Image (tube, rainbow, N blue to C red):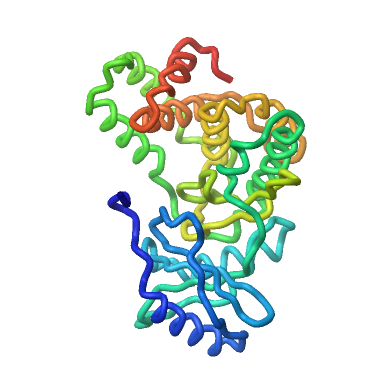
Length: 302
């Protein structure tokens, strides 16, 4: 069953027509066929467009369709300024178009979540090093000028969402201890540990990786890029490694990130706040995360 916030794929004939209209208007080769990607569990359906000399990725940006121009500008600016594997964003729909489309360069690779599951030993180290390199580059404060400083209420939003999750009833968790833990660290969130660009909902689905070379080949999903705290993305990487039993790669991730980043990732109240909140929210889908929550409460998680 498709989750409530997931969107169905539009009629392929209409999608092909609208994609080719955009491509032709921008002087680009048109497609002869479209093929849905294998993983259709997304709020923004994606297809691969096949033209005679190239392939495109076409995203139907149902969620946050108002950001089309912004994401094209930001993604291309970062791509031009760095060596990050960001797909060229060729063109996007305009107000009044039938479908909210973004047409991008096709990049090789599989979702990071899939490749991570197969990574062990040296392969896991290579994958974590590659991921850390991408994040350290993305978090370079020189890129802050790409977006305006509009302020952020993310910490307050995350806090409220975490408290709501606790109120649902979590028998295995010490709710009061978690509340005290989070409340004690909330005041520190007035200062960012790593001032940087952040991508909303950044997760393993937002990266492509080479399943043989174990390196990142694509950074995707640029709908919402703002200024924020890069430590949040790093704590989420730790959570994903923990959930996938891949913590052997964590020391390599940290060493690579801190060797490249302008500001290193260190244990701090902000990191502890974000990691606890994300762990509590993950508990709904994986009660095994209770072990990580216990480690945080005992002060034994890095």
